[in-house]
Length: 333
View 1 (cartoon, one colour):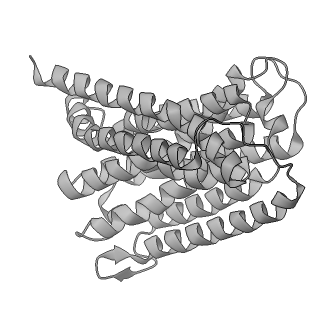
View 2 (view 1 turned 90 degrees about the vertical axis):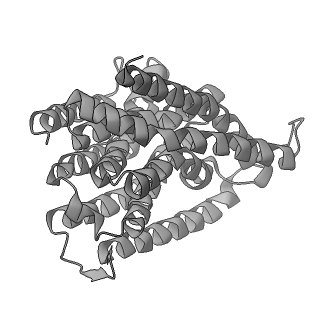
């Protein structure tokens, strides 16, 4: 069989495993939030996001350590951030046909979304001027800023959730599973998902070379979409469970975690600051994601009451995303 067909088959199988395991995470995440007394927003932003972002973490490790493909690693991160916000539009399409999704989301999501904008802005500076912050050994100091702001973000979100917990109603535990069983199943699915994610960069790099589309475009679009599939599956499953805040929290939390992953990729890439060895074209999805995140914030705060197929905010998110991908394709490396 032709090698490219094997790569395509491997890519599809790895993606299918990610979808299958990711579909279970929303169910167990919702159960854990109830059992532990956590808010659904906090659960989505912190724990669920860290698990659904594992494909990006494993992709980055594989790309920089084994494949020496920093463009693929960075493209996956910034592309996943963009695709994650697009998931809000996808969820709105499957949500109530009259009521916009963002109209029922907690205003507290603005905190995570705003930290996402801050982190993406730092990434933009690092892409445009990778030497501006200097280095410690081979590690760019901008990566330390990414990690610092990630820790600050989680701390602020935790404090907000603790404050909001006084206003939440206690839910009775009606589940047949114990907390230990739920945690065990959550971890098992996460490990399987990570294993499948390890394979994506290998197949992805070969497909990028065979297609001639360039690593920055291929990483931003195809691999990013594949590694964001857990967010898609988990978010749609959360909507069916009626836990909108779990779904949206997962989206914004994943973007914050993704930038922390970029810092980890930089630490593992020993040739120097990773963004010095990647295409400047990555600035396009970074700036585009800042724009669509800001649109999402407006939708959450404004809370439009009506929609046609999509609300105005989610339609604008989809439009900007498509324009961003078209632009990236035409200037691909």
